[in-house]
Length: 285
Image (cartoon, rainbow, N blue to C red; front, top):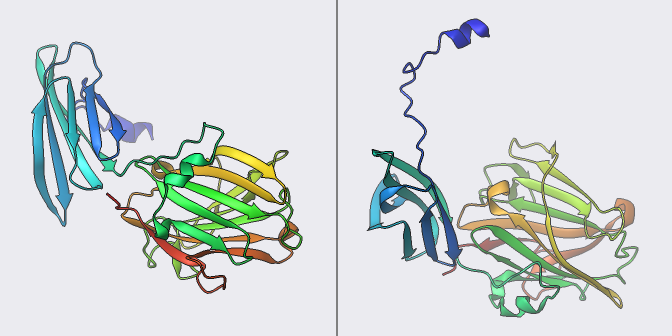
C-alpha cells in the first residue's frame, strides 16, 4: 500500500485544487436564496443550470453575495458560483433538489399543520376502518402522519410493529422485488414506544435485505388519547436517496411479536387489502 501511495504525485490525476469559496442556501418552496459564506469573497456570480435528458440549459444568471431565484418547477438543478478569493478567480458548483414547501413542523406539539395537506393522493386509510394518515414532503424531508387504532386485535400502542417499505426511486427494476415495488429501504419497528423504542432498517438496494445501522427517523409530536395514538415522523430525503419525482410505499402493521397481520394502510377510501402498494407524486408545484 505504501508503494502504491508513493506512485501518486501532485498533478498525476489532473485534480483541480479544492475551491476556497463556498455557498449555502435557504428554501421557501420553489424560491431559493443563495449566499456566499466565505468572508472576503468578491465579484460573486451565479448560474442556475437545468439538466434533463443529457442536455444542460442555463435558466438564469445573477451576481452579488446573496441571490434569490424562483424556479419554474421542481427538479434537480446545478448551481454554479464563481468569485475572487485572495485575488484569484474560483468556481464551485453543486446539485440541489428543488421542491415545494411543506406546512409540516415537527416541533410544534400539534397536528394542526396537517390540516393544510389537502392532496387526495397524499391520504391513506387503514383497512381496519379506524386508522388513517397522510403524507407530505419538501426538499429536505418526507413526512408521515399516522392515526392508529389501539383496538385492533393484539395491537396495543406499545406492541404494534410498523412495516414500511420504500421504493425511493419508484423503479420496480431496482432494489428488492416485493409487493409490486422495487423496495430500496425496509423498516420494521415501534419507534414511537414511550419506553424502549426500537427500529430496524434494511438496505435493499442489492436485492437482498442488508441490516443498516445508524439510520435516522425524525420524530415529531406523539399523543396517546383514548383508543387512538397519533404520531408524526420524517425521513431525510438526502439520507434515503429520495430524489425523484415519485416514490412507492407499502405500509402495514403487524400484531405484537409478529403474530399476524393487524391492518394495512391503503390508498384512497377503500378498506380492502388490494391497494396496499401506492405511489406518491413528488413534483407538486
